[in-house]
Image (tube, rainbow, N blue to C red; front, side, top):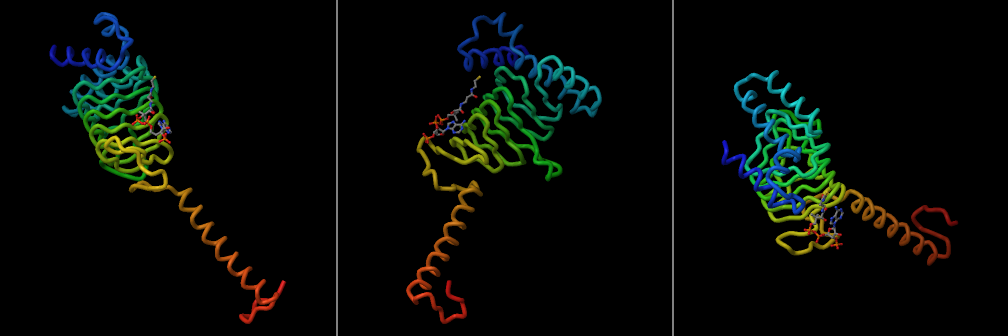
Length: 222
Ligand SMILES: CC(C)(COP(=O)(O)OP(=O)(O)OC[C@H]1O[C@@H](n2cnc3c(N)ncnc32)[C@H](O)[C@@H]1OP(=O)(O)O)[C@@H](O)C(=O)NCCC(=O)NCCS
């Protein structure tokens, strides 16, 4: 247990240049308090003492502003920076050495049952305000940009930004902005459709002009 606490504290120093002393970290980092409370709540949850688990989780939320469902599975050295507004769902699984900033939601879409929250790989950074919704995986060593809304699987070593989340970098290489790369871009799709309809209308107008306003196919002249 002491080794786990020591590694949690070390994770703060590794990720936050503002951390000054062990004393300060232990007494003032709400991310650490939330993590330690969650471990106690999870212990009760696994022994089917669900109400006690939920009460601890709610006290944790009241004190830290971080809501972690007692059923969530969290790996080693999770660092929650600032913390306020973080929500972690029941079936969420988080790997080792993950960093979460304030306002992150690891939630469900409301459409799935059973496993309905994301699985976060190792060494993932999820920036402030990002929402990851659904039961897919965010691959190891990936980064999710601030305020992104991620709705689909993210491969390893990727950077995802925007709404809906799209991959802008993979293995350190920038991805072409027009490359959907497995993530949908509905606005771009609509633009393509509109462009194709405009082209069709232009061609028809051109044909009508060439025929001097007359058209054989029954279309009346303007
Ligand atoms: C995503 C992030 C982690 C950077 O990852 P990265 O792999 O180094 O990516 P880059 O900075 O090279 O950015 C890649 C592209 O995504 C864009 N981008 C980066 N973050 C973005 C965001 N949050 N939203 C929209 N676009 C973003 C960049 O402008 C760049 O676009 P370009 O290719 O047109 O120039 C970072 O931008 C981010 O969001 N950090 C927030 C950290 C945070 O929450 N801090 C809070 C501390 S309190």
